[in-house]
Image (cartoon, rainbow, N blue to C red; front, side, top):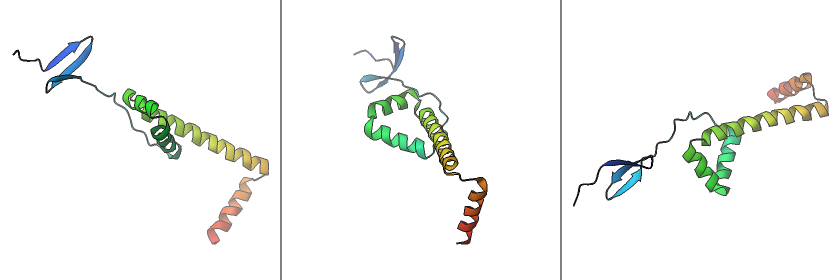
Length: 107
């Protein structure tokens, strides 16, 4: 029986011999794993539980952490904007916030 090559390239895909089978040599792109906040972790949990196909595609394409960081930034910005709008609607000023902070620290 002829010796099988350790590595082959077929149809532009690099394969490596493991036992009797050739498997594609997959390499994940280098990604910077940014710090993911609360909303990014919530999105990751949602994807894992409810959208496993999309979650796996994002992992395999190397885009998961970029996606989570983007979601986290968008949600944090939106929360800041909503809190600011609610404070403006209720007429809460910076002076009032300082007074509340001072009262909270004494208790």
